Each structure stands twice: as C-alpha cells, then as structure tokens.
Amino acid sequence: MSAIVQPIQPVSIETGLAAKFLKTCCPVLGVLVIFVLGSVENALAAAETGQQIYQSRCSACHTIGGGKTIGPDLAGVSSRREESWLIRQIKEPDRLLAEKDPIAIQLLQEANGIPMVPLGLTDADVSAVIKYLKSTEEKATVATGLPSEYFPTVLISIVILIGLTLIGLKAGKKEVDVR
Image (cartoon, rainbow, N blue to C red; front, side, top):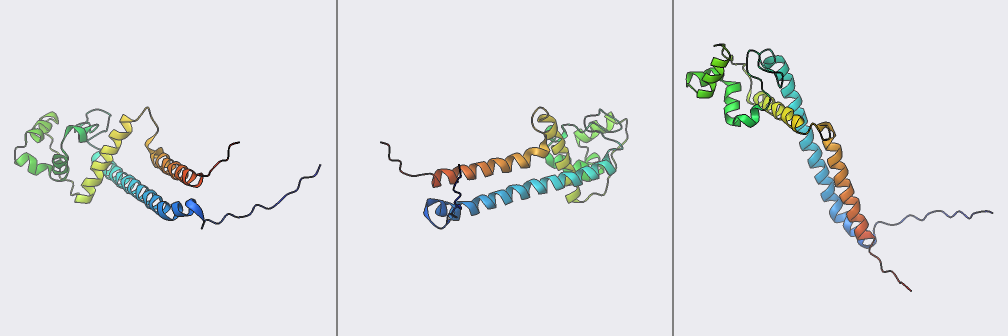
C-alpha cells in the first residue's frame, strides 16, 4: 500500500479573523510579556543587589530567620515595621536614637546598648536591602508552593496559554453543517 504525500499548503495569516486578532491582540500580549519580564527582572536584580549589601554590611550583626545575634533577627521585619521607618533606621540609625524614637531605643536596649552604626548607604542601596528583606518573606510564605524562581516561567506560560486560547477561539469560529 502506498500513501500519497501532498505538501501542506502554507496558510496566509492575512485572511480571516485570525489575522485581525494577531494584528490587534498579539502586540498587546507582546507588550504584556515584556512588561512582566522587565518588572520581574528588575525586582530580582534589586533583591540580588540587596542580598549582596545585606551579606557584606548587615549579616555580621543580623540574621534572617536565624535568631537574634547582636542586632535583631530581620525575618518579617518589613511586615512589622513601616517602610519609612525601616528606611530611616537603615540609613540613619543614629538620628533616630538622637530623636528618641521609641522603637530605636527599645532595639538599643535589646542589643545591650550596642547601637547600629550608620552604614553610609545610598537611597538605592537602602531600597535594595528592603526589597531583599521583602523577598525573603515572600519565599517563606510560599514555601509549600512553587519556588519563587519559577514564578516568571509560570506567569509567562499562563500569558502564552491565554493568547493561544484566544487565537484558537477567534480562528476556530466556523460554520458546521450537521446532517
């Protein structure tokens, strides 16, 4: 038995509903994917920079989930303290003590009178450290789910599936003659 093989004819994307859909929606999906990738990349880069700063400047006195050392354990600190206070505490801890900030004074007492020294960090450095601290909290809260490094892959996969589903729905509309 021999089979007749016929080449598949290319389908022009210029005709029908699929063409209209691809011309109007795919750029939107493309922009959405780029936006998602960019924001995830920026957040990951800031957290990585924050991790480097934390390890080089903060880990001598602080842990994240390892208990109190010289300074307090920073696990969950961004949910316990307002971000504006964290920024000031990281950037200018001496000024908070001079202003008699009650939280700063309590932390000084818990550290047996050893004050946190000003680290000379820039605003960008402080922001990166806070993003890193927040990222450690997010990892802790989703410990039973997917690891956070899979989040961009899962999100992009969902966007692609939605796009392909919409393309299929738009292109798949045809009249069927049932006899």
